[in-house]
Picture (cartoon, rainbow, N blue to C red):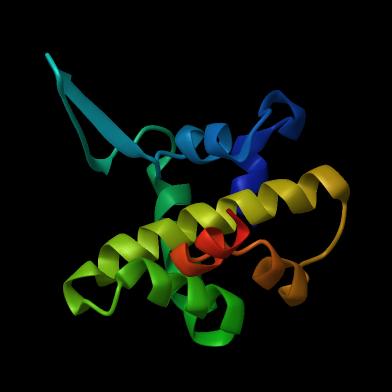
Amino acid sequence: MEAVLAYTDDIRRFRRGKQYGAYFGVTPRLDESGSRRRTGHISKQGPSVVRWLIVESAWRAVRHSPALRAFHERVMHGQRQRNKIAIVATARKLLTIMRAMLMTGETFNESLVSEQAVPTRQSRECVA
């Protein structure tokens, strides 16, 4: 968290969590050519040491946080080869959680993380 704080400077300059993730380079790159659009590897912009630390933190969080473990497994879709993709997505989620904590001044709350989880396809169909 301290490395993230050191590179963040003023949290209010990031209006959305996506901007915060992009600043640290954990958002996917977009390759476009004509009518083709492909999201590929992460952009790797920003400080690499923070990116490394946040990914290592994501590995630990997946082991200890039931809500983040559920998010990780949902991104994996039951496919072991998607493990690294899912861990980078979890790292990005950790960054958005850290941004929210810095904006509100609150500490980490496991129940809020599980409430903000992305709804599954089935629950979205029930709402519509």
